[in-house]
Length: 339
Ligand code: 5GP
Ligand code: MN
Image (cartoon, rainbow, N blue to C red; front, side, top):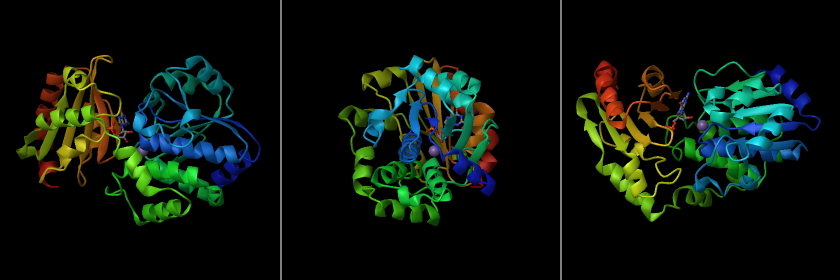
């Protein structure tokens, strides 16, 4: 971020403002962690701040400090619209285009509020007055730490803010194992622990709260795993019937695609999840090395994301979507086999 932008934002935040903070639809740990961290920080500056998520999110994120203050647009549309309309400033976190906010796309694009983007996804849209966009960052949470640092306020980081930031760094780096994890990420993480983030407890709250049915669903997903060796690719599918059989709840399939990627010699992994209610197949793509699933998703599956993690969707049936995936793979064989 330019020095001049920081000076302007500092000036802007020097008196109390009405502020709305928004993450992407289907918010994950980084989305909830970063928005709540910023919420706590802005509250300390006496701002009237509010986090509005486009839709609901998994139970394993509902313990994060400040969770009870979150409004969910899909459930409280009227009051959220009033908050958005009357906001002086809207922070958009962990996404790069308004269409990533589902039903909030319209009120956000119509809003006259000043917009500040903090995000690490590729190819951001140009709607924000102030843009802190860096695709090299592990997580939006790491960027929120830097943002507070740039404003000269790390002293204000308390245990709650540290906990929120820790959640997003941990979840978006796959517990510090992805390539996006840098020495700087670890330095920040160390400071968060110093400030009171209980690393072991946070990990436990996010990852060790499985239901029996979730593990059964994982078993089903793993038995559906298929390998296409010539493309160094593995994929998993889950039909709506299978999800129903194991009483699927939001978040139950989070991370399942990583099992496919963990196979020896596999550099591309996919999961196809049928969503009969929305009438789509939700796709998650993961890769190793330089193979860009962001590009693959943009080209074929109406999505995007990062080089090694991207999402997308298909309006075809589950079987047809998988057929389409298998059909396009040979055109990537050279790239996949050169990894
Ligand atoms: P996931 O597969 O976990 O849903 O998403 C992987 C990554 O890609 C996340 O960083 C997510 O924000 C991003 N992503 C998921 N779906 C989309 C999409 O439709 N468009 C874009 N641009 N990014 C997406
Ligand atoms: Mn993120």
